Length: 79
Image (cartoon, rainbow, N blue to C red):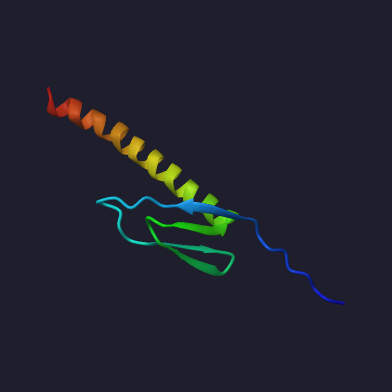
């Protein structure tokens, strides 16, 4: 009996190329690695796109946390 492998859904993404973000992005999913070139539209499995989306969300949360943590220090410095 032949074993069928399920092909993951693919989506097109384009990671921005900015002055501070120039390096390609490495992502690993289920034992497979992907090196995604910034500034080019590429097709990746849906799971890879979700990983990158979650990465951006977590960076946003981290930046917000840092701002909140620094606020009491700024208040002390201004006294």
